[in-house]
Length: 85
Image (cartoon, rainbow, N blue to C red):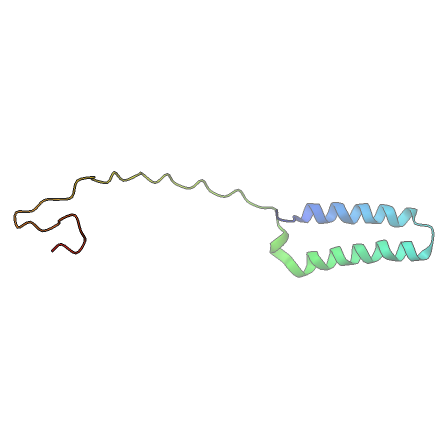
């Protein structure tokens, strides 16, 4: 699963909401560092976190029908073994 920009921004919003409700300064710092880390992920990865584009449908490949009977020649070549010349 690819991580999109929207997912990272949503996680940042959650961490900011937790930071606003944090009482001790240590908890506030933890949430702010989490936001900082998410920002760094966005800045460093650039295009890697863009929303995924759907993959194009693969073209259908026709199945080949193999001839169960080997080709017979006048000189007796093409026997049952690959070593028959």
